[in-house]
Length: 172
Image (cartoon, rainbow, N blue to C red):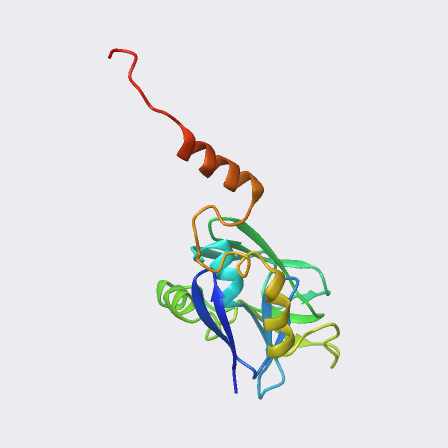
């Protein structure tokens, strides 16, 4: 059964329980039947960062990567550099318009990359429940209404300043 998170940036989201999560990086990790491990971006990460516009591999498919090595650049309203959580031989899907649309509709349906792991351990990962718990103190949960400007002190100051401005014309 999936875990539900209420009022995350004004939305109710579902965290699938058939995979593990890197809470710090906002990634999901799922082992395929052939033994390869798929890695993708979570819905909460996309909600905070903005819709994925582009995904660009920074490593060559078929090369061996190490844990913590940056392997992807994801363009949202922010630049996100994605590191591999494990070592092994990396592969990437074709990031066609159709794949990007599926990613926008359901980020759990499309991996950003896959790794044929050189080891069988995935240390430091959380299950769906622990990942949902980690979201309780995140930017998305501190802004349950999904208001523009979020909870950043800088954004709050800017939006408050705009609201307090008195606009008048010098030609009056």
